[in-house]
Length: 100
Image (cartoon, rainbow, N blue to C red; front, side, top):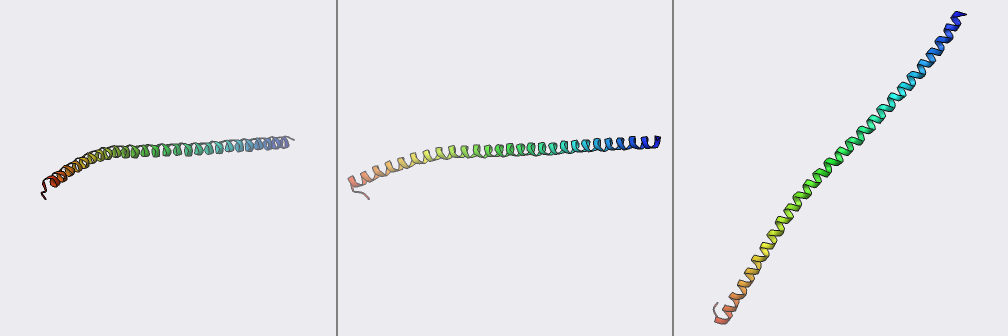
């Protein structure tokens, strides 16, 4: 009778150990899955942050170049106006005095 009882106890113990191993294994799988999902999300956020940083650097450089080109454009327009004025005066004196 003792052998049967021991055998039954052993069966119950093995069944409990197997069930506990399964729940621990399932829990570990869940932790690993959550860890990998968290890592993927965090790496994605870092990538997005780096892309935004690079884009903002490029935007700032383009904005600076635009300002420089705008100032150069204004200066060139002033020079063109001065040359046009000079040309008009020169043409006026040429017509008035008849020199060419």
